[in-house]
Image (cartoon, rainbow, N blue to C red; front, side, top):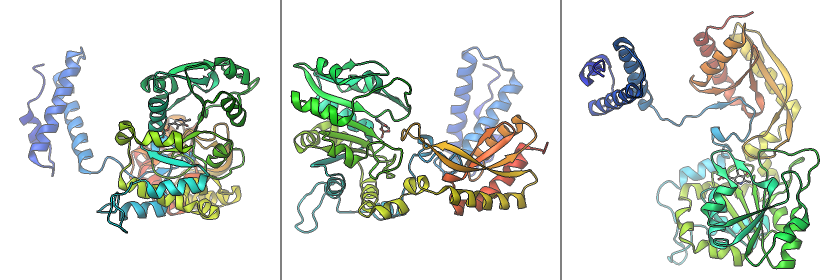
Length: 455
Ligand SMILES: *Cc1c(COP(=O)(O)O)cnc(C)c1O
């Protein structure tokens, strides 16, 4: 421990434009981290300690100078990338967020000066667009599911097919949400096959809900079978038990190869439908709850709902996104999550060739274009792969390709690409043409950093 440098000694070595008190805090915290490492048995001599401490302090101070959340170029081709913030917002939603950042009539009816609900605008749009009788919006879909279970199924049983006990990235695991909501999970069927009779036999006096969960991020192939929504609704009706559909993706318009849309789930008779706002709907993070008024209205009275509500800027973004759906053609054109999905292969190939030409002009490594297929990602449309075009840079070794990917990620702007063998691949689907110039500059800088050469 005696090898640990003093705060003063480090202070003399680091120059920063940040306030003195902040620099001192950062140094203290980094010394504390090193002390903990030593206590945990890490062997470091004084020289190593000094080097590590200086590097850590400088890194921290550097990161404090700018925002932690930064715009990145997504060259992965994954349209809904949870690590990259899922759906990029439509321009109309960005504008709405900026315009509602100050004072707004969030809970005030301007016509009569009376208090109103913050959800009025989105509620009406959601009902009109989906055909649902009632609608509610919360922080995200996990919250939506938890709210339903807590209010409608606490202390009761919820029947779910074994093939639908999903885990969605970031700790949404259905059995855990059930427990948190105080509901008793009743599993029916098997991993690959569940039949109507499985549900029928499990229904009892304590059954509160029949729940279908969309397998958003996996597919089961081979000898498989699930009970479709309409059939389950029929079973529910016979026994007087509501059917809930956790759709996940929130697709509002038909897309070839995708399954249920929100309006289709309502039309099939689901009593409650839940979905995310930032998956295929293409809006801000939100959880949508749609369905029959007698089930949705009690949810709004729960104290949990109060704890899950959306703020004004996200409500404005959601409203602006929903408005785009009033004209499906506008939605396909203006909502990036949809327009990126719908980009025709010929247009992708043209854009890839254009980017490749510019890269060739500025880089000394071979640049090629190739056709490929890629998934949509982000817990939506599992198993669906769309044709796309890749731009590839080829370097000498696989190690160099990985080094280049790493350098691109920490560059300015950060670029997310992937390595395959000796190649670094950029999937053009998620790259817009205005990003070509910064992407070329980022590649030049990263090639310099990664010191790649050509085979
Ligand atoms: C994505 C997803 C969730 C979680 O939604 P969040 O908005 O991320 O909270 C829940 N259920 C299903 C079926 C999903 O696809």
